[in-house]
Length: 178
Image (cartoon, rainbow, N blue to C red; front, top):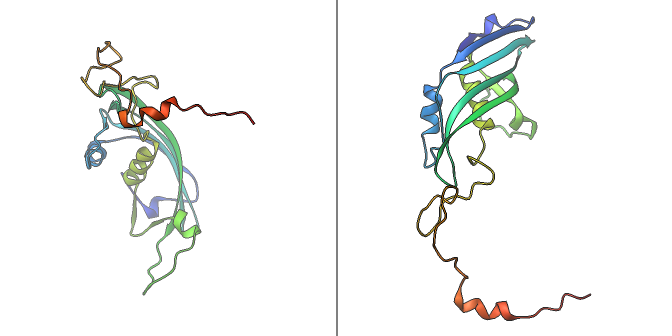
């Protein structure tokens, strides 16, 4: 959703809409990890206003994604919900090279005649997703030898004792007394 900058007034404006997820899903499919896919549009509520040339966006989103567990590879539903607050400052065209300060790295900029709210929401969704999708914190995962899902059945694989060349080190007795 694009909002013309001239429509952003000093008086806060509220907006609620359904954000399509096709482009977001395409972004999530890029790269080796394809852990998430949204099944329906995101519910977005946002309030926006301006102060001088700065644009303020406060809101929240809610959506449901199908995720793949990083341990057992099973599919599960995950609810993604988060609030956000973004301030956009006008981009100033400067010629030549400039040195950025630490505060410049935390600012977001806009240029042109409209603000693409879709990009802002997608960025916030990506930040809200867990870095590692887990169906359950106690997920036992797959057996590395036979591939059985250890959450649903027991495998008969022997547990490795470690590198046999280092077995002698396990027999050492260390005095931990002070």
